[in-house]
Image (cartoon, rainbow, N blue to C red):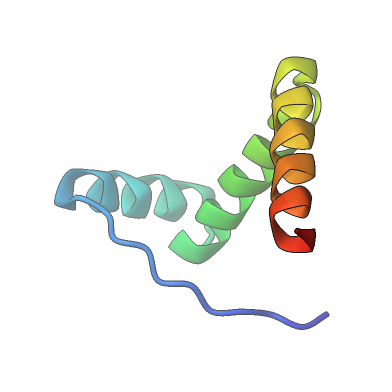
Length: 67
């Protein structure tokens, strides 16, 4: 699997909380963020309203690029 690097900027408060939770779980902050992001992606995939909205946007964008 090819991996891409992405930079995120966290407030000091969120960064400290993330470090504390990651330490408590025995994982890296990177792993904590990946787990949280994966859970959010799974959640939105199960959201019919969001997926319908996403499909509308995708179709609109396709029309823009093809025109």
